[in-house]
Length: 169
Image 1 (spheres, one colour):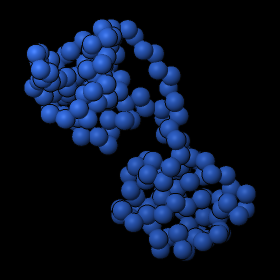
Image 2 (cartoon, helix red, strand yellow):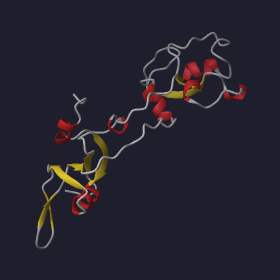
Image 3 (cartoon, rainbow, N blue to C red):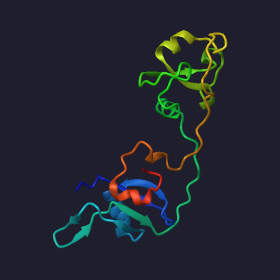
C-alpha cells in the first residue's frame, strides 16, 4: 500500500466529487471531515495502532461545485473529435490542430474554430478556409458541454469504485 494511491472522494449526497491520494484521505478522516466507505487496500500501521487505508471516502458536508467550461487544449480537442479527422473522417492518433478560419486571417483560437485534422488534410487546407480549399467539415466544431465527471473519463476506475460510479460498464 502506497500513500500516493488514488482514493475516490464522494460528496455528501454520494456523488463522485474528486480523486485524492491515500495520505490526503487519511487526513480528512482524522479531522472528522469524511467517513470511510470502502477499505480495499488493507491497513496503515503505526507502532501501536493500525488504521484502515481508504479507497472510497464520503465528505460530511456538501461541496457545491460550479460547472466550469473545459479548457481548450490539443488533447481535449482530440478527445472531443474522437481522434478522427473532421475533414476526411480518418481515425488516427497522428492528428494536428487546424483552425477552420486560419489565425493568419483573424480566426480566433476558440473551441468553435479548432478542429482535428490528419496531416495530409491539414497540408491540403494550409492557410485557406474550408470553402477556398474545397474541403467540407464532417461536423461543425463546438465547445463541449460542461461535464462534472470529466476527470473520470480517461482514468482507470478501480473495482471498489464501481458501485459509486454507475455510468461505468
